[in-house]
Image 1 (cartoon, rainbow, N blue to C red):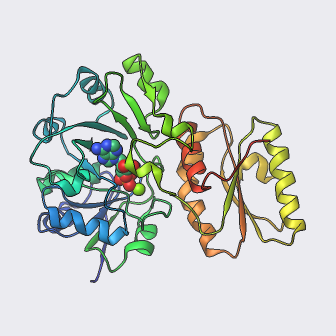
Image 2: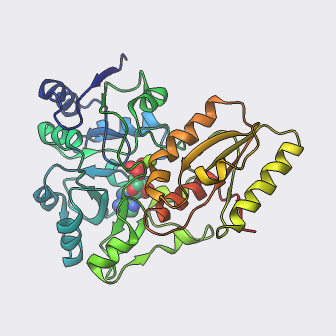
Length: 348
Ligand code: AMP
Ligand code: MG
């Protein structure tokens, strides 16, 4: 298959191009599109066969359900039932935006979307290109991230093409994504809403809106089973093994330096995904990826996946990553770094 690559304006996308992409979706084809979080790989959420082809293109395990993307809040009504007051408060506060809400599913949703669960994940993205595409398609769009399973998610169209060129009909290219990590997933089928995956909407924001929020214990400990099926897989990972160093600052910096010097002493080719502050202290023979200021988690999030992917084009044999504070977007950044490291973590 020849994948069509269409560049569109992020604020005023060409409606002819979006209509063509929407027609592809309606007819069961796969279309990759930008959102404010990462690029998504979309299929018609009502078409079981189309949804199955997402799993095939990504090499995704079939027990890992997909998020249904909608273009207007009212569309949630026919896809779900028993929407709680908490869920409604979240929709009012954060839709459109980087928040996915888990609700009881209605019967019209094919099993391939939910992996056979009684619940479904729904999100209304704020990206204009994404929303316009979904609106023109006139169907909910099932979309995971547009990467091969296990690799870091794509935050630009070139990264989508590296993974999926020839396997999908269209990629819409609106440049880099604003946020750079996936949406926050909140389960609203439990009495107290529970964060299953940290993301663009922070824990602090959710507490502000709801008062009471739980964090899935599966996120905190590697020994617990995570409730979002996807969170149990090694994920977001570069090819070379990566070690995450996550002590409080400033010990963190000295541990990182110690580990890097030791690896260089062992004649390893070393990569470092670190803050700008730490990058300035590293020897010249280290392959450095600057993620951002250690005090700016949004900058870290924005660069994270491109930088992790870039290591795959180098000859580094081992990578060290610098952790940051878990405040705000830092919680999502640290969750992704822990998973990308396969929980190879040094704390002191
Ligand atoms: P991705 O689209 O690649 O960001 O992956 C979607 C994430 O949503 C995965 O971690 C899934 O396990 C999670 N997810 C989707 N549907 C549900 C659901 N009904 N209950 C819990 N988690 C879900
Ligand atoms: Mg994904």
